[in-house]
View 1 (spheres, rainbow, N blue to C red):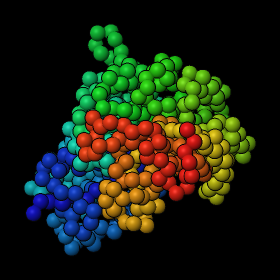
View 2 (cartoon, protein in one colour):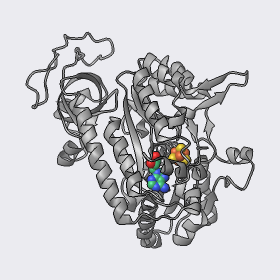
View 3 (cartoon, protein in one colour):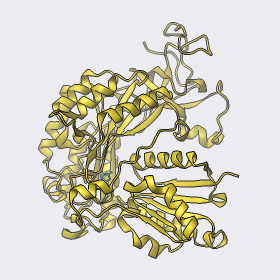
View 4 (cartoon, rainbow, N blue to C red):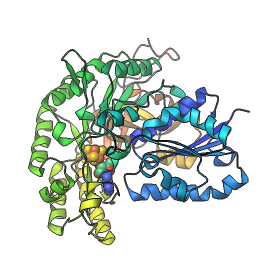
Length: 499
Ligand code: 5AD
Ligand code: SF4
C-alpha cells in the first residue's frame, strides 16, 4: 500500500502554493494524499505566524495529536513553514511528539527529512539562517525559493494556478514577522517564471496569479545592465498562449509605478485588479508601522491608479488597534475607507509578534475589546462601500471565469459534484476580481463566460449567463460559436439578459 500524506494549511496564498508543491513532490515519491488524519503515515501542518491566532490553532491541533502519536508511533508529524522558521526548538518543546520542523526556505528537503526520521528515529530540523546572524548573501542562500515541477492534479482546479515570482520581503514594517520567516526579498529569473507559466498553460491553465509579498517590487538584474521589472515580466508572460488572465498580489503602495499601471492598462490579459494594503489612514500610525508613505501619498496613488487604469478595482488591508492608535487616528482609517471606493478590505486586529520592531518598541496598548469594536465598525463602513461598488455593476455585462459550485451549493449537496451536465449554483470571478454567483450547467466550470449582473449584496454579485456558448461538444477547441443569446438566463433570478 502506498504511504499516505495528510496536510493542513493555514495562512496566505504563498502557503497554499507551498503545500501544493509539497504534495506534488511527495506524490512523485509514491505518496497518496488522504483527507483522514487517522490513516496517515505522514501528517504535515503548513503554518502561519502573521497573527497569534494562527499559531494557537496549530498548537491546539498538535496537542490533539499527542495521544495519536502514542497509539501510532510510526506516524511522522511535521511542522512546516513560517511558524517552524520562527519558533524552531520551541515547537519541539511545546510539542515533543513532532518529528520534523522545516522552515519556508527548506521545503525541498522534506523527502530527505522523512527518510532521516525513519532511519534514525530522531527529530529533524531544516531551517534557514536568522537575518540578524549572517551576511545577506548567506541568509539569501539559506532561503531557497521552493518551485519544483508543477503537477495539475495538486490544484483545486486545472485552469487556475499561483506562480511565485519572488520570495521574502525587505520592507520590515514594524508589526510584521514576514521578513524574518520568509527571508530577504529575492526575485526569480523571468525566464524561469515564463517557462513555468508555459508548462501550466500546456496543462490547461487559463489564469495565473503571480505571488510576492510585495509583488510590485519585483526586479531581476539580467546581468547585462538590463533589469526586468514587474511590468516587463507581465509583457513577457502576456505572450504565453493559453493564458487568458494574469493577476498579481500583493502590492506595496510606494512601488506602484507608472510603468506597471501602464502595463495593466495596455496588456489585455492583465486583469484590472490591484490589492494595495494601506494598513491605516493615520500618518502617525503609518510612521510607527514604518510603512514609508503618508496617507496623502496613498490617496494620490489611488487617484493615479484610477486615472491610468480606467475601471480598475482596488482592495486593501487594514490593521486596527496598532500601538498608539487613538480614537481620532482610528477615525482617519474610517474616513479613508468611506471615501476609498475599495472593492473590499481585509481588516485585522493588531497581534504583537515577538521578533518584530513593533513588539520591541511599542506597547500593545489598545484593549482587545476596543480592537474588536474598531474591527466591526471599519468592516461595517467597508461593507457599505462594497455594496455601493456592487450596485454600480448591476446591469453590466462582465466576463467571468467559472470556478466551480458555490459554497452554499456544496454545503447543501456535499462535496461530490452531481455530474457534468447538472445544473447547480456556480461561482466565478470577474476580471476585476468580483465574485459572481449564478445558476448554470456544471460543464461551464473552467470556461470564461459573459454574464449579466442583476443583483448585488455587499459580498456577492448575482448574474446570469449571456455568453456565446461553444457548441458541438465534445471537441471544444475548434467548436463553432452560437449567437450571443444561445445560452441565456440559466439563473432562476434572471428574467431576460440585458445586452
Ligand atoms: N497583526 C495583525 N495583522 C497583521 N498583518 C500582518 N502582520 C500583522 C500583525 N502583526 C496583516 C496586514 C497584512 C496582512 C497579510 O496581514 O494587514 O497586509
Ligand atoms: Fe510584512 Fe510589510 Fe513585508 Fe507586507 S511589506 S510582508 S506587511 S513587512
